[in-house]
Length: 340
Ligand code: ATP
Ligand code: FE
Figure 1 (tube, helix red, strand yellow):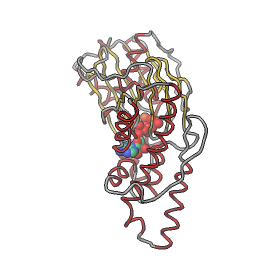
Figure 2: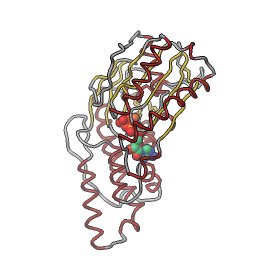
Figure 3: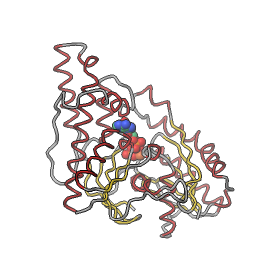
Figure 4: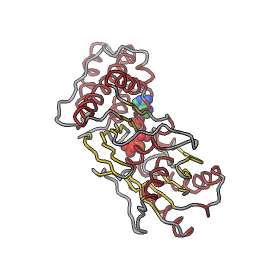
């Protein structure tokens, strides 16, 4: 079974070929145009997708060393994401499906982030989590705890009621003047700072849900108050600010994850999404593995942020279940509670 994956939910145009679960290619074109605006500009994103999609798909097929006639199906991200961006990938997938006479498979972007753990780079690769497992999905747009029962059966048991973890990093970084996206910069500076230097507020909400807007406000107020005393406060303290911010985000994330793992008695725990690139979060996972006997799964950096290999691997498992979609499938922008 050979699947072509297409990802265009946000600001990365990507295409990948996966054969029987093994990745043959994974091409990603990132969009630099947004940096100047300090965030993704939807209209610019969809235009860039239009420019990139044909060369990116052609390159993915070429690097895979296959002919397009060998494709069994085309898998595309249907949502959630930016409507204009999703439309480009969806329309392209339809065209390809008709011209090659192969079925289409719709992919939930969040299910794909989770199933990134199953991408094999060589046939011998054997690092996949076993079912059931919990997955902490932390990205630019989402923070969720997902109970994964099978490839195509996963439920969101907790999620953010306001900002995502990545958004908390990005917004706080922005007010410190650290550029966009701020997450990686905060991570780098945090490595040189004291995580106990500042205390920011943590949410008190029931269940497994998250909230990061209070932390953001508390961070802002700290800056505002300290800047009145010393205009150079940020410059002098940015390492400590970043370390304390990062420690607070990780603490919030791990508290609910620990609670879910304990309540559901699941020790197989994975992390996915762009924020899983964070070294402090990775360390927290390794620490929990030791302290609580968790078997933890941390993805390779290249599979944490948006990529089409995760779309193609999800397409592969949906293909095995014969889950195809009709030609009139339209993108959706909002998160669904049931994945797969
Ligand atoms: P979604 O999948 O929810 O639609 P997205 O695809 O835009 O969102 P990702 O690409 O998965 O999000 O992740 C991007 C986010 O990851 C950004 O908020 C970025 O700041 C954050 N991020 C990346 N690297 C790090 C890091 N080392 N530390 C903290 N955050 C990071
Ligand atoms: Fe994503």
